[in-house]
Length: 120
Image 1 (cartoon, rainbow, N blue to C red):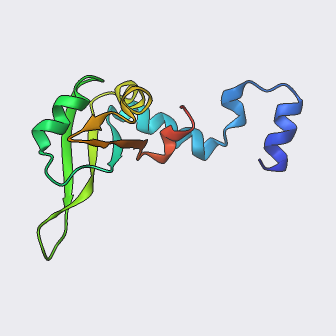
Image 2: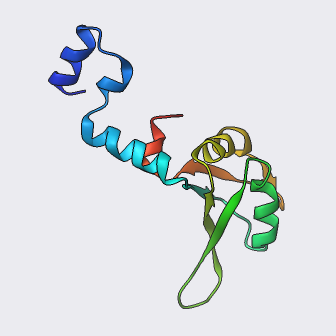
């Protein structure tokens, strides 16, 4: 933390005031935007979008899911991005669905939105 933030913390500032204004603006913009993206890694190559959507719909409404493919071979790279309608659903997915098994592999999840990472 920078010296200004440490000084505010010593003066007993509320937690929201400890986040720099620029960071607060990004956090609130991401949350009010209504969409949050989750990075999904360690996806089995034979998994389909329907398989993954079924897993992630346990956490909330899935807006979209994008599997990433190699440009040349058109084979899946083993990771994806899942967009949730609500930021709370994305955080729930990361907390509850990390290490869920899909076709014999444990999925790794993390918030792709940097502004929401501090909320975990």
